[in-house]
Length: 636
Image (cartoon, rainbow, N blue to C red):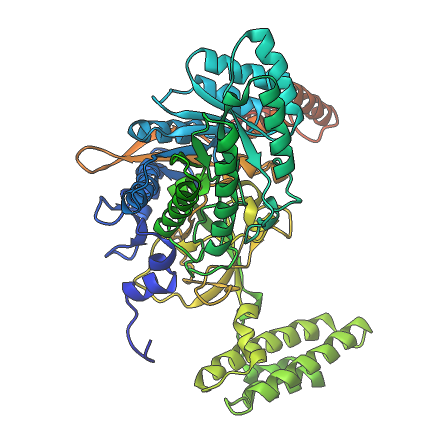
C-alpha cells in the first residue's frame, strides 16, 4: 500500500486473507462486513453482521456458533466431484464411496444434514466406539452406504455391528488387533452370521504434519503386514477368507504434505493387491482420513496448511491404486475415504463480542510534563530518549531503553524508587517503544530486534468466550484459526491486538494468527467505539472443536444456529440450539439446583437472624439466585 493512499474494503479482504483460506465461502461485502457464501462462489451471500443482529432479535445471545448447511453440502459435492473426475480421467473402473467419521463432529444436526446431502452419493458413516455405533444405527440409512466400524472392540461392540448387518446395513468391521478375529469367529458361530471385515494396515511410513505419529510402525492402531498374513491364514483355516472385504489405512489427520500421502497409498495399494490373492471377495480400498484444511491460506506443508488441492489428492489416490491393480491383474476396487475434517471444518463459524480492552503497551506520554512529575534520573532519562528519537538512532535507542528499564526495575525491587515513579517510568518506556516502532517505518531495512516490536506492542481485547470450550485446539496444540472482525472493514484497522477469553486462566489467549509467510503474533483490529458492539468471527471451527471443548470455569456450550438457504435464496434459521445454562453445567459436576437453593436459603436465614439483612431483602436475594440457574453461562 502506498503511503497516504485511502483504505479500501479490498485491502481489508487481502489483509485478513479471506481469498487464501476462505475457499470461496467467506469474504467481505460492499458494506465492509464479513459475508458467507454457503454454496460457494456465485451462490447466495449472507452478511455475517446481519446474521448476528437477526439472532439477537430472537434473543439468541453471543457467543454464537453458526453452522451452515449449504457449506456441508458443497464440501461433500466438492470431494465427490474430485474423485469422480479423477476416475474418469484415468479410466478407473471402480467407484467412489465417501464416508463421514462422526468423531469429527458428532452433533446430530451436522450428521443428519450430511446424510441428507449424501443420499445420492452413497455417503456412509464411520464409528470408533460403542456410543458412536449406537447413534449411527438409529440415524437415517442411505442406500448402498457403508457403516465402517473402527476402534478397539469388545464382544458387545461386535454383537451390535452384526446386529446392524442382520437388519440390512452394509457393515464392515475393521480389525485393529489380532484378538478381534478370534472374537468374531466365536460370535459368528453363535449367531450363525457371516460378517464383513477389513484390515487396518499399520504403515511402515509416517505421515506429515502435527499428527504424523498416527502412522508408522509405532502407530497406536492397526496390524502390521505379518499380523495381516497371520489373520488371513487363521480365516482360511476356518474357511472364512471371504469375510475380508476391505483394506484400510490412516496416515494421520491434517496431512500437510502430498508426498507422504502418495507414499502411504503406494504401500497400502500393494497390500490390497496382495490380500486380493487370498481373499477373492475384497472390494474396498479405504484411504482413511488426512485430507487437510488450509487454515492459514499459505498453501504450504506448514502444520496449519496443505501443499496440495482436493483434486490433486483424489488424482494421486486413484492413479496409484489403478497402477497397482493393473500391474497385479486385480479388479479396480471401490475407493473409500474418511475425510471428515475436509467435510465439516468450513461449515462452522464462531462469533464473539469484545467486552473490554487492556492497552498497557500502547500508551503515550507528554514528555514535557515528565520533569514536573518526578526527579528520578532513570525516568527523566527515559523521557529525554523519547525527545531525541529519530529513525537513524532508533535501534540504539531500543537497546538503551531496555537497559534503562532493567535499572529501573532493580531500583524499585531494592526499595530505591517509589511506586509513582515506577508507574511513570513504565509509561515512558512503553511510549518510547511505540515511538521506536513508528520510526522504523522510515527505514529501508528493519533489523531483527526492531521487527519483533509490533508483536510486543499489542492491546488485549477481552472476548466473551472460553477458548477451552469453543476452540480448544488453539490452546492445546497451537492450532491456528482464521479470525477477523465481522464489520468496519471499510476502515483501516489501526490497532494490533491479541485476544483473551473470560476464563480465569492465563492460557485463555490467542496470540498466533494466520499469515501467508509466517505466524503473525497480533491481529489488526479497529479502535473500540463507546456504545458500539465490536465482534470477531473465528472461522473453520467445524472439525473437532465442539466435541473436544471442555467446561473450564464451567463455561458451557455456546448457542448454536443452523443457517440454511430457502428456495428463494433467503437466510433461514433452520435450527436453534440454546447453549448451556448455569444450572445445566452445575448438574454436569453433580450440583443439584434444589440442594443449592436450600443451602442458600439457610445462609440467608442466618443473615436475617444476625440482623445483616431483612426478611424482604432475603426474598429478593433468593429470587436473584434462582434466576441465575436459567441464564446463559457467558456474560451479558
